[in-house]
Length: 191
Picture: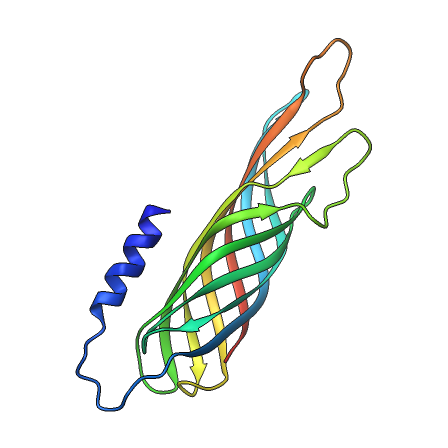
């Protein structure tokens, strides 16, 4: 979380005051959907260190305020469908335009927060809870500056999940802590 605050403060300091026209803060939205891609290694009973590729669905929306010509801050909400969990990430978000021509611009994204299991339906005896989430990345925006644009984003997504499981035999506690590390590929629109 400290790195996100330092990033926002350093980026805000990069803005120059030598702008020809006055800047007015405005509402900004990025809505995207895509895939979470990753490789998972696990052990299950007699199967030791099995490795599988996983593909999951993700969608999110960033709603915020464009506080500088290149910098927007706001809140990101979404849905991530993993094989055994439906997580609803809610996080603080930053969007920063690096460079580009008028129609094509490179931008950075950063989200940090908590994933909730609000819409997840557990089997009998199971209790799934979300956990911390971080999601830094970069993207390209095609469209008019200050107008509607098409976006493609590539990011790293780390999501923690805790699952309490039903007890077996003489167990007093049974749980599983999961960490989903995924490459997120999303497409969407911004305005």
